[in-house]
Length: 349
Length: 275
Image (cartoon, rainbow over all chains, first blue to last red; front, top):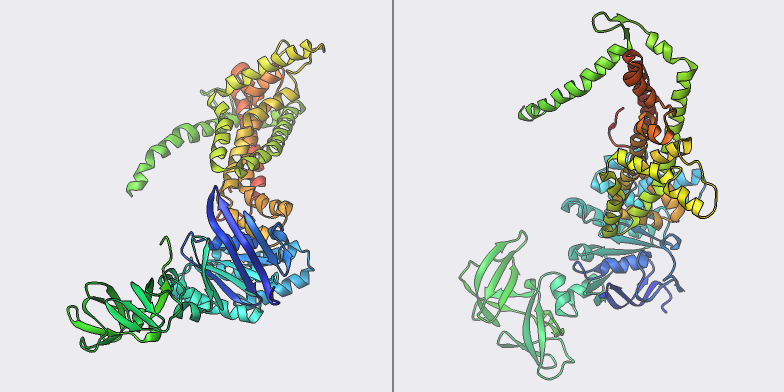
């Protein structure tokens, strides 16, 4: 086992009433990293988190924490704390009592408790809120209290289950940066669950993309965005054009009726594959110069760029560009070899 | 304005059936003589200070407190057990629990007569087993049993309805923060269920302190609670003035009790309730 591994999930499977929600999941999580479990709802990301937290028992497999099997250890004896989706703050306690809850349970001396609570309040920027009731706090403030309540126990791992889901967009962006900074400052492992790919790309050191109870890809945000392993990942992370293609030989791929140079190899001769091209990687040129040709069928202004749908009979290409071409214009499109991502076809999709 | 108009029938209802009778009771308690010539007096209240009557009040309050305490001790775990079940099973259990309440209160109490009586079901079994029959009826125990039996649902239902509303994530987060099952109960579940407990206590104590049917049927003719005393003054003695005075005293007593209980209910948001 790798030395700085803190949590190791070994072939975890979970069934509810005969339905498999996690299928043979293997994952190791390093110390001090910000790891995100990303996927659509129902992909098993929350179940994975709850298994790590101890709220669910895996049907099969083991949870290893710092080299010890903790599969059967109840949540209250794990050095792991959780920030719940709806904060789950205790409504009958004020801010101080909420944050001090875990320390009171451990029967720490009073002065140490108040010292550590005020330290935490400073960290989450809520000094002077000790006596406030939970009901008087805004969503963002409640979120911070929930984070403080978990962090004050100095857990080795903090689990966060879509903690920003209930906040509005602006506050969410602020909290993303704040969370990331907090994680760097306290230096503990964060395991974060979200379905928001942008959130995952912004905050994570490592992203685990999941679908249907299976890990699709593990990697850094840059890896996952630039080198998606399959069409699901490509489609889920950012926007993509996914078209059918044929791999003639190493570095030569055919799609959209044209043959292109690419940087991928190791496929069988004439294997049917998926080709993924990001919308921003399609370069608009004159029809004559373009490798692909098409007619603009719709234009949407997106702020930084325009989104155009270009049809050429075979495929519809989504193009992001700062140059706007009106609907009905025939244009050409070029793709650089390194921007063509060739992927094995996923069965049963 | 339109919505306000809708409340008028209710205002009339309250005036005719609550405010006017209460005012009459108060009037009677402070006067003597008949309707043709009423005179103000405090003698009706003074009369109550007789040890015989104070004793009745003391026994009534004691019995009401005992039955409230016992329904709480019995009812809280029942509510907790039901609330922990899966929703489908929960509803069945509540349904079973409420079914007896569909039957008339008097009939239910009469049923205990046939169970506890000298030739009743329980004594028949005891005799069949070769023991001497027991005196199960017409004592404190029988009245207490009758009260607990009749008022238990009023304790269980409010507590249950508060317990099922406690978000499971609160319990999970307490567990997450290191609380074991006992600590989760004392620090989270119990404090959050206090409003239900207060409602339950109020709903049991009030009818228990003023009942006269249960004590009449299960306590026998001589058994005297404050409710029986009032009944007696109005129906047999015919002294409406004294009867009214006792009613007022009992009402004041109930109000004081409720004020005291609601003091414990500090976490309620806003200032709902009576005070």
